[in-house]
Amino acid sequence: MKKIAAVLLAALVCVASFAACAQTGGESAAEPSSEATQAPESSASESTESGEDSDTVSVTAEPATYAVASLKGPTTMGMVKLMQDAENGETFNTYNVTMYGTADEITAGIANGTIDIANVPCNLASVLYNKTGGAISVAAINTLGVLYVVETGDTIQSVEDLRGKTIYSTGKGTTPEYSLNYILRENGIDPETDVTIEYLSESTEVAAKLAEAEDAIAVLPQPFVTTAMMQNENLRIALSLTDEWDKLQGEGGSTLVTGVTIVRNEVLEENPQAFAEFLKEYEASIEYTETNPEEAAALIAGYEIVPKEPVALQALPYCNIRFIKGSEMQEKISGYLEVLYDAAPESVGGTLPDDAFYYSE
Figure (cartoon, rainbow, N blue to C red):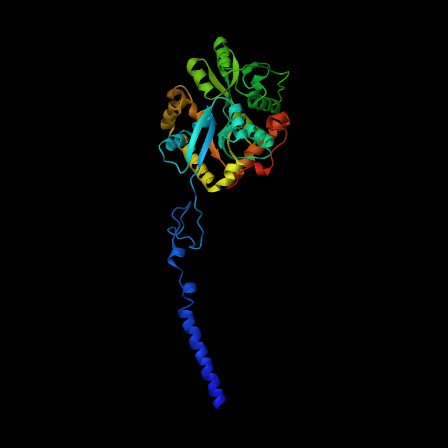
């Protein structure tokens, strides 16, 4: 009996000792230190005030400095608010934006690493992807179709009306030629035999042809269309190649894509959060251009993308400036590149890009 009492007493002592340890030596497990509970100084998103799960881990986004290139024209129009905000120090990242007259200059900058982000023609993005062994990604569409059939008469009401006509255009061996030929062929018109297409080197030369003849027909991009119409009161827009393309593709199909935004993968991988912030700010800039045309036109003229503010204001609705990303971007671009590939494989770099070409957040 005494042995049983001694055993019980020893057990009670052990329990008491364990409880004391839990309240003293085990204190750090029950109550985190003040250092562990401190919130990060800055983060890409906050979730505590919105009532989301408090266990969500927020990722700190460090600002980056990007060298951004863009072609002088519609592909830069949607970036003007971002450019102004960057100059005023009101953007998350630092953006050093340079406009170029030709895509060749941008191609060289991407290749040698002096350009981080660029707005380029859609097919050039595919060419660069193939040439660099997949070293770039396309992040967004920034501009849809900007090509129009214009005439000084009133004879063209449909694509069929182009049969037997002479058409002046620029862009031999580039997107304007491939797009026009695709639309003609799909409407039963052979570009080689059923029409005469004269390719000139500059849009100003095409505008001069339109001014010389009473019944001239041409394919021109915006904002050259608007500039020519302001100089020639007899000129009118007969067809939108974008609309004609969409008729052929139907709902959910591809569309005529002019400009896209690409990024070097090395830059993207260094700071993916900063690039995500760039896309947010760029999307907001394009939305500003769409919803505030007068203010945007003033900026476009101020940055000398077009010569005069009235030209920019009148051209904006026809420039199809849009921000499209994700699966919709991939659907539209892949279908568009397939059409170009079928017409001339070299126009997309010899092969169609794989899924790794398309950026996804």
